[in-house]
Amino acid sequence: MSETLPDFDEQLDTRGLFCPEPIMMLHNKVAELQPGQVVQVIATDPATTRDVPKFCQFLSHELVTQEAVDDEFYYYIRVCD
Image 1: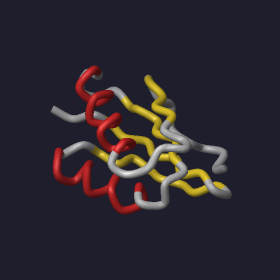
Image 2: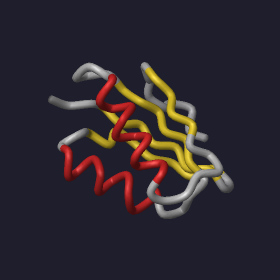
Image 3: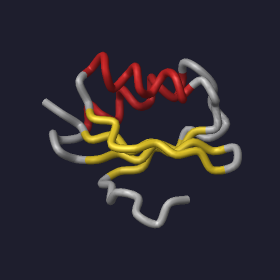
């Protein structure tokens, strides 16, 4: 993993879950957060590499960064208004 990953306020671990569960859980988590807060999502479903960026674009949240490490995917999403 990169040495300079962003700080985050909440973590959402969706390892072992498959579409659509990670995105449904992300939608619920984002609703709990305040604008400007960052959630780290950990996933193992390769479909999240497509679904998470589309989720952020559709709902106007900022995908700060994403990274793949072995069989895990890490996303850092800043909640916007």
